[in-house]
Amino acid sequence: MQARQPLVESPNGTMELSNEEIARYSRHLIMPEVALDGQKQLKAAKILTVGTGGLGSPLALYLAAAGVGTIGIVDFDVVDESNLQRQIIHGTSDLGRPKVESAYEKLKDINPNVEVRVHEEALTSENALEIFEDYDVIVDGTDNFPTRYLVNDACVLLGKPNVYGSIFRFEGQASVFYAEEGPCYRCLYPEPPPPGLVPSCAEGGVLGILPGAIGTIQATETVKLILGIGEPLIGRLLLYDALGMSFREMKLRKDPNCPVCGENPTVTELIDYQEFCGIPQANAAEEGNGVPEITVKELKNKLDNEEAINVLDVREPHEYEVANIGVRLIPLGELPQRLVELDQHEYFVVHCKTGARSARAVKLLQESGFQNVYNVKGGITAWSEEIDPSVPKY
Amino acid sequence: MPKVKIPTPLRQYTAGSPEVEVGGATAGEALGNLASEHPDLKQHLYTGDGKLRSFVNVYKGDEDIRYLEGPDTKVGEGDELSIIPSIAGGRCR
Image (cartoon, rainbow over the protein chains, first blue to last red):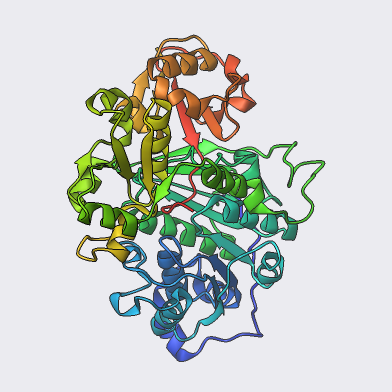
């Protein structure tokens, strides 16, 4: 096996391990691939995890336990009930707290020798280079396209490895994007998918355990890079299918025309990644698509006054089972075939979870000749928050 | 006939199938046939003017067809094509 250059030089002579640390890391110290020197390299290493969510939780926990000396965490979110199914660095008692706070405490409890640096802010084009500069490896545990392109470009510009992981439902991807030695994220995905074309929250979801599998792969790759051992995932995309319980591997190549790491790069500084991913345009289109709306309060009044209205729920049956307000269910996908069941002269109010799918349904009904169709702003989530908290929010 | 592996985000358009057998002598033909057999898949794979979308990566075995012969890459019995979409994470926006 070809020995790699360790990313972090052995700090021999300048850094010692205490007896407590030697006892703590004994299972590393007796492995020749790590040994005392490697453990010191880990201690000297500075790792940044972007996000302390599904991926960031296991990877930060393991890196702290493994003895990585400095762990930076970037997050601006607070802990929410729906996080607890997979974000194991946060607990029930942390609900409502900033994620960096509960992550800090958990990491310090696992290993007080670790210096945890908290960056309680959103990662932006303005602060990314400055934040990244101090770290040896950046681990991408984010959940959206703009931040992924931002992390990639900042890593390429600074010449740092980007340990990538991504999850959806039962499927995960992992790789190491390191433009100094191989392809970057943009070589694989030159452009993001337009918003709306990738499955939305409604069709999304993720198996809670999945980020555990991918996050620990990211942690493994990080440790290998620091120590310069083994074969890193540079130039390889690992695909994990939890349902089939199979791993596959795809070859990645450096794209000579890559706009950021190619021969003639056109992206030489950080750009506006929201814009690049089409987010403002999509928001504008959504707002501007002009479907008539009513608020949940207006809907409540109409129902209380027993006005002659039809309320339709266009979510999926499995969502209806979780929470519903007792109205007729026609999933959006079935609506085109089931228009015949509806009288287009009547008054319709359509809702979904948060209002996006029902806006599409309203549009469809309008195009089919319905005159009085209204979208419930904020969907059943708003109903639960403003009208009837006994309806569960999911 | 080549097999096409369908990633989770697109399985809703193939009635849940993780793998579909389609006819075609090239990767382009096979994907075209896949899209005509599953019309809802079409807009996810192709742009309005019929080009494969740039964020949809297609692999034959473990090789990106961009580095083989693109849509003209020959495929035959037992070959496996994989669609590798970009996924961002567990949450939307």
